[in-house]
Amino acid sequence: MSANVHIQAEDFDVGDEIEALTAELPQTGAVATFVGLVRGGDDLTALTLEHYPGMTEREIARIAEEARRRWALTGITIIHRVGRLTVGERIVLVAVASAHRANAFEACEFLMDYLKTRAPFWKQEERGGTVQWVEHRAADVAAAERWRKP
Amino acid sequence: MSANVHIQAEDFDVGDEIEALTAELPQTGAVATFVGLVRGGDDLTALTLEHYPGMTEREIARIAEEARRRWALTGITIIHRVGRLTVGERIVLVAVASAHRANAFEACEFLMDYLKTRAPFWKQEERGGTVQWVEHRAADVAAAERWRKP
Amino acid sequence: MNVLYFAWVRQKVGRGEETVEHTSALRTVGDLAALLAARGGGYGEAFGDMARLRAAVNQVHAGLDATLAPGDEIAFFPPVTGG
Amino acid sequence: MNVLYFAWVRQKVGRGEETVEHTSALRTVGDLAALLAARGGGYGEAFGDMARLRAAVNQVHAGLDATLAPGDEIAFFPPVTGG
Image 1: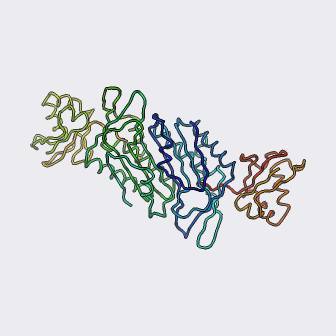
Image 2: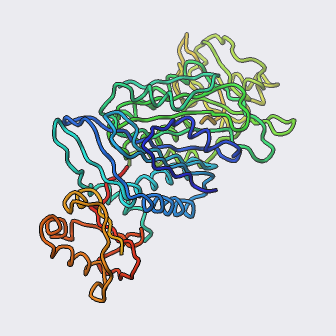
Image 3: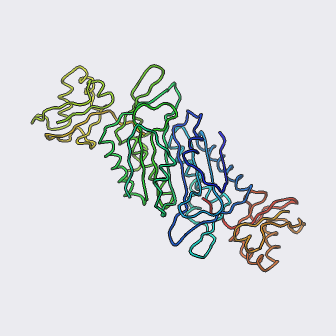
């Protein structure tokens, strides 16, 4: 199994991606998926996402490889969009296929937690006329820390 | 928020369902989704699913209501297919929308664990020429038990 | 009372549904199961070991000690295996 | 060495990329950051508080004590906020 990793400006179709992930893999019984959207509120109108071409892909591939070592999986697809995205638009897709659901759920959460704290993406928020860089959240760091082995 | 619950013979489109779940809900930032498939292996060719019309819908609605009480969610869609399904076909979809991903993931896992142990569905497996009822799994009961409050 | 059977319970008793008159002897789900088991044949097989069965009264999961009333819908089935 | 800047680091220094000659005085990422901070202006603002910055050497997360070599690609950026 190898992970499909895409950094792109274009939107994605979740159904098509799950279909592609599980095609020709009859041993898959479970697909856990996460879709992140631009959440409205506090006058937010849009986000602009920037990444580090080259490193971002490598870092995500490393995280996916770590998930593959820790759980019995049959496939991983990760798509992260960059550029300007308005409220309600999809930002990220993590889809994990496995024989059983517990592995798929855990690996999907792990991948999201690590994406948030390890993969080089930076977000700017537009609120009314002002644009501001998003500070990283302590809650995200704590979420990633829980996967550390003792 | 009310849960969309469907028991049907027809297939579903995961992308369309997520789209419908999050449309007009700008406060949604996260959608966790689970798709269960007919897993091949050990000569399995197909499953046939039976349900208890009326009670199945009510029981799933109760489980969804419990999830709504326990987590801050913006939407829930549950689709469970019945009838004969061959290897690789989709069986079940649970999609949970929330402002934040931790709630979405937890509620999605909770719903799957409860569906497995509380919702009246029964499966028959076809292997080669023989057809056999599936016994319930102790692992599924244990998975559901972990959500019990102390 | 309307009595429903699902999965292999339905197959063993040879029907999905039947009417059973509510009597004062049928106080609980367990009483009804005993009555059905006593019929022998497929019923005897299906209801011989109640530990293998689950029940619902009016579409809500119920134990053997759940009480019955005229007009109730009672269902017998194996432990569920959905998802 | 190729030095890259991202997010508000890029905005403060006014460029996304530049070449900095490797010298024996530039042993670590911290040495390079100190050199850049000493330029003042936008560089001074961006590199004034290294606790607010993260770095990578050859596209791998690295600390201030990571050593440098000629031809390395070094990047400076704020803590990441993806997903």
